[in-house]
Amino acid sequence: MTENFNISKAKVNDLETVVGLYRDARLNMDRLGIHQWTSEYPRSDQALKDLQSGCLYKLTKDAQSLAVISINEEQDPAYKNIDWQFDDSKVLVIHRLVVHPNYEGQGHAQSLMDFAENYALENNYTSIRLDAYSANPRSQNFYLKRAYHIRGELFFPGRKEAFYAMEKTLLS
Image (tube, rainbow, N blue to C red; front, side, top):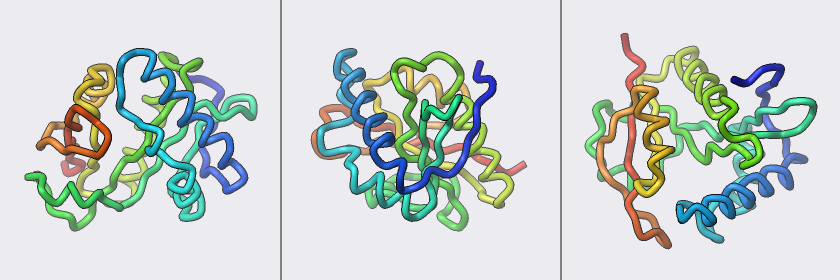
């Protein structure tokens, strides 16, 4: 598991590192036959927006960024067509969780999700939403084990397979 790491807000000067993480993860997924991300997603302008708005967090060890996650309340327009369990009153959304391929399997994604879920609890969110590519069983299982439930399917440009719209309740 992850030890001696730090999770902090990423800064605008981390843009090149974040874009590199996205690129390396996309290339690795492509090698594995998982075409979850495309050359059009995620883009550097999306990373810059996340950095400027303060919603992108990085996991570092020994000053090296190993993983990032974006958390905010922004929902893709396609989310409106999903039969969510909770209304939109106070929902946190997970975007672009990525671990550099060289550091996968070391608990970094778990640590970032623990961070995001604790953030949501501390800020009184009712639920967390995200989408997971249906052709990426490792990702699906990761979220299912964390008590996320599939609420429907989403389709995004450039992808052949659906994404599962997933939600986790935070109410006691």
